[in-house]
Amino acid sequence: MNPVAAFFFSCILGCGLYINKYVLSILGFRYPTIFQGWQTLTGLIIYKLLTFASKSDFKLASIDRPAFISLLPGFLFFTTSLIASSKALAGVPIPIFVSVYNTLPASIYLLDRVLPDHPPVGPLQFGSAVTTLVSGGILVLSQIGLDFSDSAYFWLVVGVVCSAAYCLHCRIADARYASWDRLYYNSIFSVIVLAPASFYLEEAFEALNFHHDRQELFLAGCIASAMLGAAANLYSVRLKQDEYFGPVQHLALGVTALLSPLLFTTDLPVWQWCLVVINVVAAVPIPSHVSKDEDEANFPGIIQDF
View: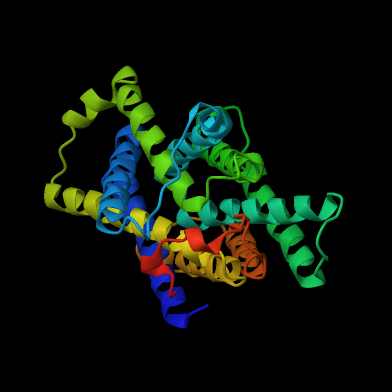
C-alpha cells in the first residue's frame, strides 16, 4: 500500500471519528436520523458529482427489480448500522467504541476459519482475533444491567451486529454490484428512509429548536463530518483491495482511541484501559472484514493510483 495513501486515510478516519464525537457528545446534537441523513445526503451529492465529472471512471451498474430485492437486506443493515453507531458514539467513550467495533473483523475472521474450504489459519491472526473478541466482549458484558436496553452500549452492540450482517450479506448479494455501486445505492436508500423517519420520530422538529452557544462550531463540525465520511468511504473502496488495508485501518483506529483522552473526558477504570490497550494492539494484525471486489476495473479511476 502507498504509505502516503495509508497516512492520509488514517488521518481522515481519526479526524472523522473525533469530529463526530464532538458534535454528538460535546455539542449534544443527539438526533441520529438528522445527523446521519445529512451525512449520507452530502455523500450522495459528492458521489453524484463524481459520476457527472468522470462517467468513464465512476461507472454505475443500473439497478433492476431482482437486483433491488437482492440488495434490500444490505440497504437495511447499512442504514440501521449508521443510526446505531451514531447513538452509541454519542454516549460511549471512543476507546470503548473502537474496542467493541474491533470485534467485528475478529468475528468475521474466526467465522471464515470454521467454514469448509477455509483459507489457511495464521497463528498470529487467529490469536489476535480471539484476544480482540474476548476483550471486546468483556467490555460489553461489564455494562449489562437492568437499563442495558436503554443504554448506548445496547446501540453499540446493535451497530456491530448490523455491520457484521451487512458484510456477510455482501458476499451473497447480486454479484453484478461492486463496492462503488453498493456505496452509491446504500446512500440513496438511507436518504429516502431517514428523511421520513426523522419526521415520524419527531427528531426533525426537535432539531429545528437546537441552538448551541457556538453555533458556528456546530455548523463547521457537521460539514466536516460529512465531507470526511464521504472521503473515507471513497478511499475504502480502493484501499480495501490491498492486503494491508485491515492492519492500517485497525492501527489508525487504535491510535485514535488511545489519543482520544487528550481531547475528550474519558473516565475509565484501570482494568478497562488495560482491556482497551490489549484490544487495539491485538486487532492490528487481523485482516479486513470487508470483502474484496473481483473486478478491479470497476474501481473509481480517481483513486486507482493509491
